[in-house]
Image (tube, rainbow, N blue to C red; front, top):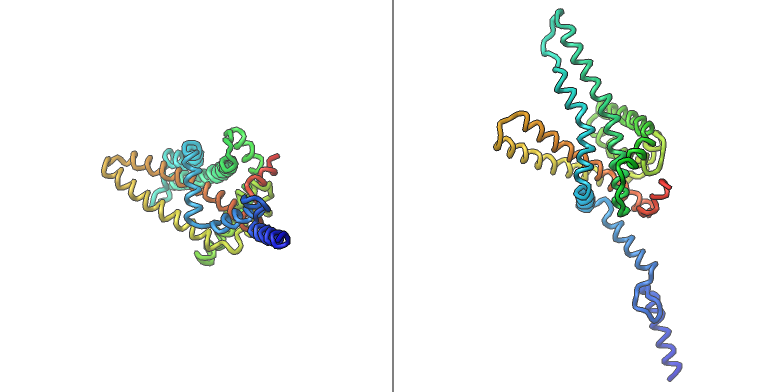
Amino acid sequence: MQDEHDNQDGTEQRQKSAMGLHPGNTTPHPDKAAQEQAEQVRASVLSVGSVLSRSQKILRGNFVLFSLLSLVSILPDEIWGFFVPSPPDYVTPTMTYDYLFPLLSNAVAPIIQIPLGLLVEAVITYCVFQAAMGRQAGLGEALRRGLSNFWALLLASLLLMLLLGLGLVLLVIPAIIIYCMYSVIVQACVMEGLGPVQSLTRSAELTRGNRWKIFAIFFVIILICAIVGCALFILLEFLTQSSMVLHIGGIIVQSVVTAFVCVACTVIYFDLRTSREGVEISALARVFD
């Protein structure tokens, strides 16, 4: 009888071990629980609903800061357009200055806006990382992190614009593929401290096999923003006929959309790191140590 009892106990222990339980304990084995949690995370990686849900949650928690930062990146073009008139449609020999001055002046706005936009995205990327870690990043700290990678970001973005221009010359679809391929260069540069070429290579590596999912996420974001933007425009037009109010409303919507896209790109980057490398967000903190 004793031998039979011992055999039964041994069988139960083996069953519990197979289920990930310690003998004499009904609590799942930590390794088993971690593995199940990792599998659940990987199952939701780059899901459109999951990315959008987490992105809007992070944006809601930092709405004022992220929206104001995005507004700062948009304002140079708006201010420049307000003070500098558009070139005339028809040019005569006596109107050369009237044509060339606005044309050359309007070329200055992107020179200011592109670097500023990159810096803002870098700052938002770092703030999203801190939010995911359960911390509250100070604006000064985030700016220092963004500035430390500024030149690498600028060069990487210039290379990306050349590739996008080439894609547009060929066809629109290659440009879309290129955009999805290099959609996380800012995040790779900021989070991993990479150079311009390395950031492009890293983004291409991370997005490999997931570019259609990334395209679907951006497509849904564009669709939602277009619907919401049209609804707000119709509402404002119904409430007021002021073109200034409508213009200001458009700027506010654009700043919120810009902030949301920056957050979504960072969430996509975290998902890609998790799915391809099994890296947790806490492990990414080492780059800032």
